[in-house]
Length: 119
Length: 108
Figure 1: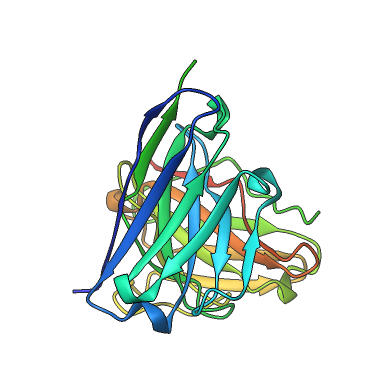
Figure 2 (figure 1 turned 90 degrees about the vertical axis):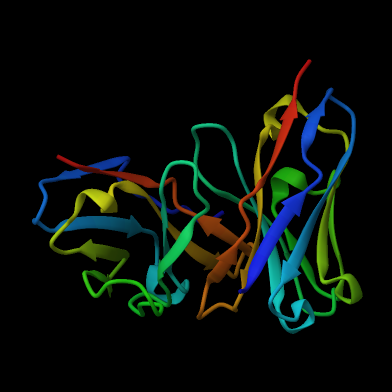
């Protein structure tokens, strides 16, 4: 069974950092582009990052530029989201998803990791 | 930056047809996909590339594109279709993916 599983979420204070991990199983991560998407409580989906198969190409949303970074380690079948200088408004459920390309969409999602930033 | 619009809510009686729209300038060039999200669950891809249904998605789900509007149609609506529905596009100018604000489908 193909699966994505996020981990690393938690409760932090403003200004602190967290690193989320997304581990793939049932398929070879290195063959796929990946994205991170978040969803604040009771709100809609917000795309954050795209990373290419080998990590050479990254696209990011303006809302997290300069504070968050995406990376991947294909040997570990993992994608990461490093979140620095966290703000209260970063409180959300963070999903990783498999990006099948412009014509095929995000076809596999994890269950999400909860990040809560409280002052 | 590119703007995507969706109605906040749509209500429909069981067995009827629900229509959810996704609007944007030249949206026919934006590679539109549709996701269903039920409470407490991750999003699920229900239509990709405007009108293609993934394996396992019922034929009741269909997509259409015309002018500046993409449409998700759910025929013979069931109680289990009650969910949030999001369109997603690729904004080549901003080099970013965008989700619409989402539409809550209520089955009466």
